[in-house]
Amino acid sequence: MSAHLRLILWTCALALVPSPAVAQRPANELGQIMVLEYHKIDYPEARWTRTPENFRRDLERLWEKGYRLVALNNLLDGKVGVPPGTTPVVLTFDDSSPGQFRYLEKNGALEVDPECAVGILETFAREHPGFGLKATFYVLPAADPPNRLFNQPAHDGRKLQYLVSRGFEIGNHTLWHANLARYPEETVRKQLVLAQERIQRHVPGYRPRTLALPMGAYPREIAWAVRGSVNGSSYQHDAILQVAGGAAPSPFSKRFDPLRLPRIQALEADISYWLTHFDRTPRERFVSDGDPLTVTVPKGMKQAMRDPLPLGLRVVERD
Ligand SMILES: [Zn+2]
Image 1 (cartoon, rainbow, N blue to C red):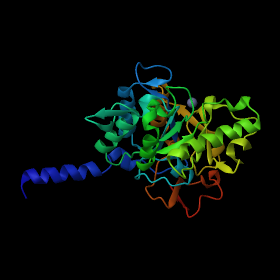
Image 2 (image 1 turned 60 degrees about the vertical axis):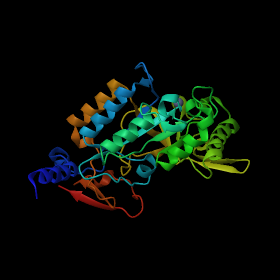
Image 3 (image 1 turned 90 degrees about the vertical axis):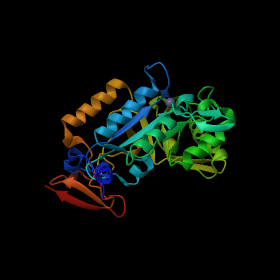
Image 4 (image 1 turned 90 degrees about the horizontal axis):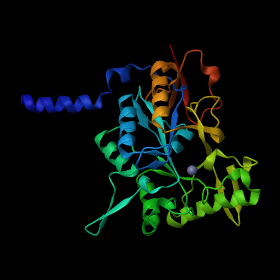
């Protein structure tokens, strides 16, 4: 074997082995998880806008610090399939603004704009095997432009179908960003079921499993948002996402409440705060054992676990 070939093989092997810092991190599947909340991916950087460059840098920082993407629905089911020593992180995008998903027309063909969130995520996943390609998009099917389904009306259906085909999730964010605290039961339920129907018009049978509350406002009774049926169509949300609140408890913790799931707004200051927080207090960080069938927790922590655990999972205590 030539020295050159040996070097190539060695480099490939190295790329697959987690860095020593990641591999040595002891598993703690009762640690906390970040659910990041993005709004616009656009210019200039502002309270509700992250530039494409900064978004890419967020992904870079997450990758380097040993975070890997998980789908929210999988997390809810207790399926955290990330490698040992790494930490799951969830990405969410609210309000279906144009910079989240844009098509460009090139020589008569459509391609995903490499500078929109979907394009950036796809390129990043390709260049960082193992990082994952997961996110949930909380879309508005009947908002005023530019927030109606990413603002390219000719491609509404194609975009929603594309998201699902790539393994992204679509979530409910009401029809047009209704503040659910302000409406009677009938309106709340209609907002939720009609939003789902609009999504299903493009992706038949698709059920948004999660709801992100516009402005973080719960309806007068939380039950209205959880499940219901209007004129024969029914909806059911397995999780309700807030607009703030910090890191989320582990899905295996007693403190995990899917109907009050906190998020971290993806602003420079907040992302930096939480990344530094977990660097300084690694005990609080969820670290995977790499085995999707076991939940590894530090000794003495068993009483903090949710009971029962999601079906089929076994507890392992470590020193
Ligand atoms: Zn919103």
